[in-house]
Length: 456
Image (tube, rainbow, N blue to C red; front, side):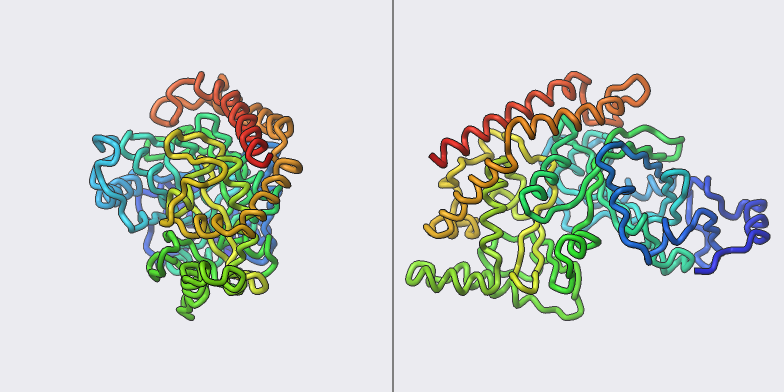
């Protein structure tokens, strides 16, 4: 990539056409020269491997600074009011407005990290209930996503811009989790147990809404599945990647958002899976039904995910919600389940949960009901649950990891300098954060015992 000569840089800086301190009141003329003095191929280019140690450190809390500016913040508010039906901080009662199927709009922002700036980065809000409830309550600690080359067509200087090898990143604010740990620990547990899942790390985030940077507390940054996860954990990203909104009762194309291979318009893999899953063959010839299903769908892997997910207790996903999962058509194994959005993992939600045996799950969730009605798959479920309890979900080990993460982020949540408070946090008081650790530990011990009793 060719960059602006120093003599031309000084002219632009002197005339204040654009500077790295721009508050992004509005984008300059798309044809104007964009100055990118902090660009290096190692940090901004797309010819390097994703640097997981820098972007997803496990032993420190990174810091990110994002400047929205007044004009962008106004545009975001107008867009959100259109989508959810109420202004920021004025939403009335929970559930008052339906979800919109449209995603919030992107705006371009400068992002700073480790003394360097990333230019014209795409910023948009994300999520469903977390976003709507945060918006209704006027909480500035909003869930968001960054896309580092979203505006490359308008600004060719940032073509294929990356953040240490990553094109996109997702940021979870822990809205329903006073411990601020669940997104992190849930993803860790899945990967340790052999389930492909996003890498995660903790970040302190400063957002400037037009009146200077405000500390918005500790977020969990989450690796985007269709960006780097598939290649990193499967070694091949040529198969179809889907982000579904389906119960698998029937095939509706609009419920299977394709994240790649869009031009091929080929949904035959999910069509065949759903058709086979719901066929009467499962009652007439179960062995043939299983064989046919496994030609398209990695049922063995699904039973492993189901055993782990049920033991941890996470029902903000399939079984109660028709989303928060991806599917990847792994060339050798078929459609493979990938968990997503684990911010409510290891959480007891009372009447919204179910038993370890899953007998209360109805036929409206056929991937669970039909497979758990089959004795072969039930046995796989039990084998994987026992393996999970013996090798991963060991109470003392999980407790130690929870304590480590709590101590790591505590100075940035309730510290004397970095403190989450007011409308820039979801914590109503510091005690909720402090007591949440013990609640999590009790949950782990309780679920371990319930699963152990079920297997006996």
